[in-house]
Length: 353
Image (cartoon, rainbow, N blue to C red; front, side, top):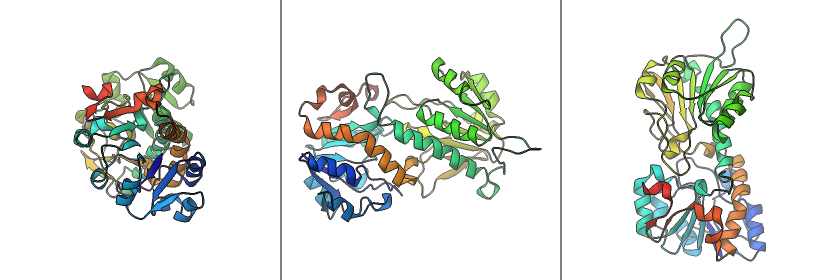
């Protein structure tokens, strides 16, 4: 099959879906792999690195999309990509359609088959292609939040870990999946007092065992409202697979927070889990509501493209090979569950409501 890897076009997005070593594996299996010129530069890969393993370099996006049958990219297609996608394309990438009704409609009009990374689900219910980016986003959320608490950034000027004679900072994390766990781990390792809100009992136990300075609580609204008032950093990492994120923090809760506090919404790809959330980019990552700094960048892992590209590629390569090699790939349950749209129709149950 002819596999096309375009350059990412989202603002300051530096990832590439397939690194040269992975492309080499696909070429050795008899596939033709095309990579758009310059697609890997921000991830540390030159065109020559791809050519060395048998990849064909497409000079433009137009030529890339013309050549490819299976289009493998990282982020959802935006304006420039949508003009080049065709009905016969098989698109494999993050789509997050629950938060993007206009994109959903456009893909339906094109009529292609769209398989979303975040919807591919193993038999045990895990999301293998979402996990690596969730881990990275979780760590970035704590790193960015810590920085935004600095006074020159408009923060309250608090060091999360504290030191003898000062108070520790307080971090609240919603959700204890891959993203939430990594946010909590990093915040706890830095010395902050961490509260993780989670509904699943098994994850509550995991969070309690994480570190002595981590408390795990069920998210009763009254408890959330009480704890959020004096929180320094609040991180939203709530996920309902392929569906719009539930709102766990209200505008009134935000109003109750101290000026200079910080909210980081990892769930923004799925619409956001704070009532005051709105999508931002790395070019303009923050805004302020009621004195509280909000960070709601929709492609957080794009800030560390070398790490992110290697991680996502390792996760998706077996699935790319299955899509390219197996005419009956739709009988493979994890990929079947990943189909969001096909032939002008919405397929995934979470998107039909």
